[in-house]
Amino acid sequence: MKRFSTLIWLENRRNWIWSLPLMGSLLFWAWGIKQVTVMSVEERLGIRAGLLVAAATIGAVVLCMMIGRIRSETRKGQYQVLLMSPPSGYTHILSRFTYAAGVAFAFYIAIGFMFWWIFALAGISFDARSLFELILAVPFYGMSVTTLPLLAYTLLLMVFVSAYRLSGPGWVPGVVMLLGTPIAMQWVGEWIVRISYTLPGWRLFSTAPAALVERFGELDPETAMDINTALNQGVPVEPMLVMLVVTAVLLLLAGRIWQEVEA
Amino acid sequence: MTQAFLIVVRVLVVALFLYWGYRLWTGTRSWTSRIMGMFFSAVLIWQTTLGTWT
Image (cartoon, rainbow over all chains, first blue to last red; front, side, top):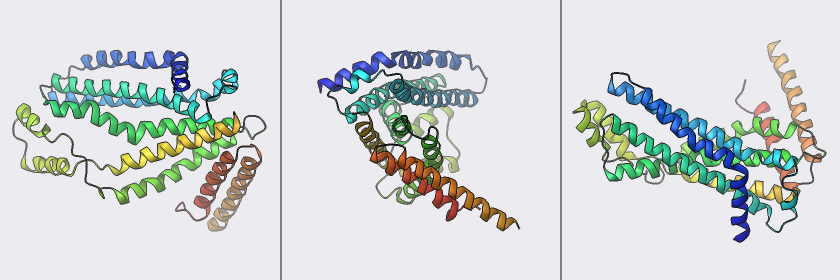
């Protein structure tokens, strides 16, 4: 455990120059949100939500770049001392992933708070339960389905390419993996769609319609029915479970390769 | 004519993916990397020959 915490500390030393600006960029997005002064409340809310979605997307790219530096660091010999140290390849990979996942969680919770803020600016006040779902449940679900597998995939890609760095075919491993991934993901996606809603859905924002009605008045019956149907059905938990398993498998593979190549 | 051209292209692409698979097998001492390389090469060959691309 001490080795793991030491590696986490090392990850922080190595990556704070990425994680700190990433968190600081939220101030820029907050400033951008305040600059949106369109008259229509709905339009203003839509533009601000779009800005936050852009912030979340750019944040995911930055996190992937941060975790993907493992290859250049290995090539520059930054791991030479560590490679002779007792922690296993799995511990190295897990510490790297845990640090990035921790930063991502903090970042997306902050984005969740900013969503709550733009709703408040639009005069929509959620109750405690919806707020909790907005700042914890939605970031956790979104990260499980997108960011965590993406981080694990980037890590595996870099470790896989590094496995060929001594006598290997240069760019071939990266190209083969990048070309093959969309096809493999298509199979996984089709399977996820097939098994979705086998388990009961995760019901979120069940009290949100009341807040919308309070702000905008009664919705037209068709829209109200659509919203109620969607909220009663909930979000499927299968994509989250499958992608968490995919993440674990990708990390195991990355750890195994590290163990075989670097240890 | 077009069909024959597409078949030739596919054969060439499959040959390229087979060559890449060979390079990925021989380019490392990590068995997990070899298996991963074979998996992705096989996925690409499968998609080129039996996949839904036309």
